Structure formats: structure tokens, C-alpha cells
Image (cartoon, rainbow, N blue to C red; front, side):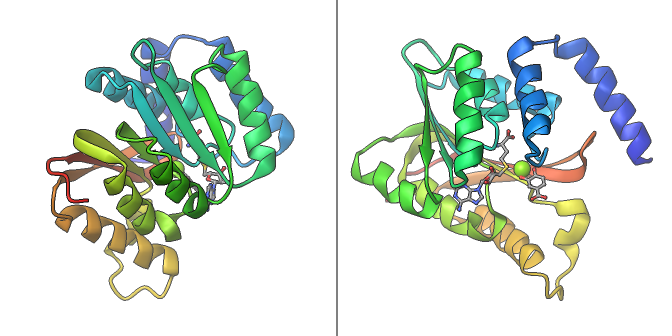
Length: 225
Ligand code: SAH
Ligand code: DHB
Ligand code: MG
């Protein structure tokens, strides 16, 4: 199996299941035009997030790591009537572009892009009692992800879904002795999700147009905070 085959099959799935979409396609084009790194979820992963939010009947969604708003658009389109999504972004250029892309998708009224380091905006969400969130998508800086998981536990309730991106990193997660802080952080993330009281979690390995990685899926079973 090769990257070429993963990409070809990913394209086959997207051609079948993800129709051309001006708002989503425009968001990707805008990121390329602005020279923003194209580290958004793939179209098929976006559709998976959308389906999980639909299955959950999510009315209150939290995203950590907005980039150009691509995954936020997928998630916000799954919101139940009256729902809203809050997405946290530290980079002003990314936040500005995301707001434009979200408005272009007709979602400005239901999506709140909060500018600032998530370690500062998450306590604000707790303080303003913005939770409980039905779904949290963690896709920002890996080194802070263990902390984001802890904040997510404070902002969810039993039945909530916590999804964490980039938990396999090309298999680097197996490298016990690695001195790479990202590898150590990913191992820490998996150990945290696996052992956190009040969570039922697993990891789905993923291959596709963006290589080999994994998504952790966790359901809150018990409120611990
Ligand atoms: N979820 C997006 C991709 C996010 S990429 C999508 O799939 O479309 C990761 C984003 O996290 C980047 O935009 C980066 O600027 C942002 N980020 C990095 N560190 C952060 C922090 N400490 N707080 C908030 N956002 C952060
Ligand atoms: C990177 C970050 C991501 O969230 C991702 O999905 C892929 C790559 C990165 O920083 O390289
Ligand atoms: Mg990611």
C-alpha cells in the first residue's frame, strides 16, 4: 500500500460522497491563496465529523483549532436547529480568514470564532458557562492537547463526544524512546484518553490524501468535574 493508492481511494470516496460545494471549496482555495498551511481535515474526514455531529444531534459544539474554518463549516452544518459552534484560534490571520469563509457559507450567525490562545479562551468558556458541549473537536497544537482534553472534560457532560485529531502521526506514536516532544505528547494524549475516568475511548487509524494518522473518539460516560 502506498500514499498514491491512499490518495486515489480517498478521491474515489470523496467523488462519491462529497459533492462539489462552493463554500467548502472556496475555503480551501482561500487558504491556499493566503499561504496558510493546508493542515485542515480532508473532505472525507470533514464528512465524518459532520456525520458524528448529526448522529449526536449536537446543538452545542466546541472546536479547538480553527485554521481557515474548513472543519468548522462541516461541523456547523450538522448543528441541530438553534445550535451554535464556538471555535478557538490563536492566529489572527487564520481567525480573520475563517470568519470570512464561515460567513460565505451562511454560518456567521451560528459560529463564534474566538481569537486567542486556547489555554486562555477555554477558562473563559468555563467562566461564562458556555458548556456543556455535545461535541468537542481538538485539532490545534499537539503539545497542549493533554490540557485541552482536561478542559474538555470540564465542558462536557455524559454522552458528549470528544474527538482528537493527529494521534498516530505516521506511526511515530510507537517510538517509546523518542526525544521528539511531539511524539511524547501524542503518547501522552493516548494514555490520557485511554485511562481517563469517565471516558470510553478508542483510536481510528486513518489513511488518505493527507497520509497516515489517527482520530481518537471518546464518549463521556461519567461527569468527573
Ligand atoms: N480544524 C482545522 C485545522 C486546524 S489546524 C480544520 O480541519 O480545518 C490547527 C490550528 O490551531 C491552526 O490554525 C493554529 O493557528 C491553531 N492553534 C495553534 N496553537 C493554538 C493555540 N494555542 N490556541 C488556539 N489555536 C491554536
Ligand atoms: C499538522 C497539524 C494538523 O492538525 C494536521 O491535521 C496535520 C498536520 C501539522 O502541524 O503539521
Ligand atoms: Mg489536525
